[in-house]
Length: 225
Image (cartoon, rainbow, N blue to C red; front, top):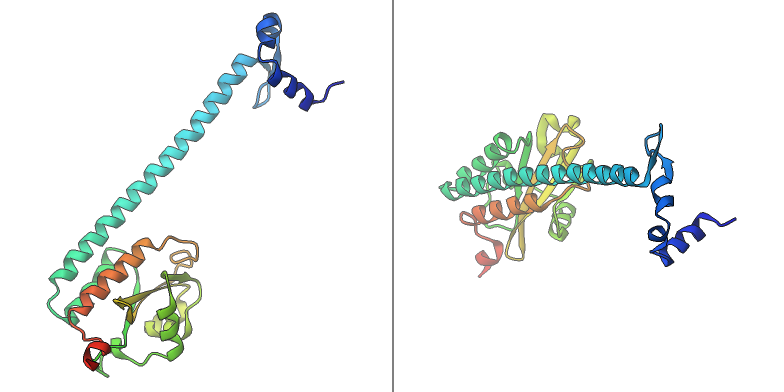
């Protein structure tokens, strides 16, 4: 008795077999893929085509959904860029970033820390002390960090909400090759910032904020020069 593999191999090598045996093709019955009565090869092919079409339609709807979501996020990033351009000073730039991320991106907790700049204001949280290990971690990031664990002391930057936070994101703020700080985001939702998520828009937001802040800050390199 021939094995299924041998039968399949025979049919591949003899493409005219069913043309020479039309009656066999017409009368051949195979099980319906979803159970029940037997169907002809033609009916079975039709079922397979319909199933493939359904899967393709589902995939298309999924891709359209992703496209619409990306368009919406892109529009939010554009509006953030416009607002940052309008900000007249350092405080205004920071306030714009905080409010925009909260109101338009629905990020419940946002913090910024700055270093490697000449300006210092001990009374402003953005210029608070940041551990060397934290600075080095941020400086070495090639893409934003997202995960369910805070990095070094960053969880403490979120005040009374800190014990309840379950997901975090860190975005390096750079002026050229020099890291001048970090944008930190957090949420009580463990699924908000997860390790496998895309970080393209986070990186763009970081670039926009760093550029906006740089208009009102002097890097230590410039100060030294």
